[in-house]
Length: 222
Image: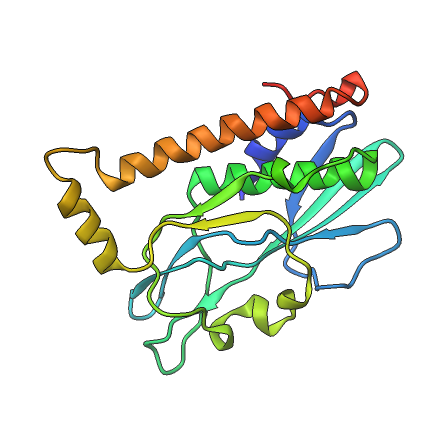
């Protein structure tokens, strides 16, 4: 959680007028909002899991994350809940916590800050301003909603915000691409990292142009 808090603090300090703080809250429920609070669910957040019983590992392109936000008396609060998944190989599996790449965390939080600007500062945000989260992990089969805590608690009923791009569909596809690239091109993993960094820079540039048309304290150039 500290990684999420540190990255959010850095982005928020650059782009938001008032101080904002992020903390984890496993009691958050979908659509259960107090007056003045808003809700945000990213369109996709790829993550990795490992079973604590059989140690089976799997990846998911649809790790659900729920954010509740509020601005009161010049101070912003963000509550965050990451929903877990269970192993499909164990007869009595436990719900497991996901791990995320730092690039995914940065893009999800960047899009969260855009949503905050729109909800609480009335800044006009276009769909093109949101950064595209790249699903570059090998995913086998469709999303299993029966083993997803978020699906069971209703996250699918929340309108999703953001953009998602799937670049890897299976382990075999990834291996085939890497074999074709070997010796003549950069590895697939390297290409994806460069693509992600380029998207981040491009996204910030677009947002800067849009926000600079508003008040100067919403400057998102970096």
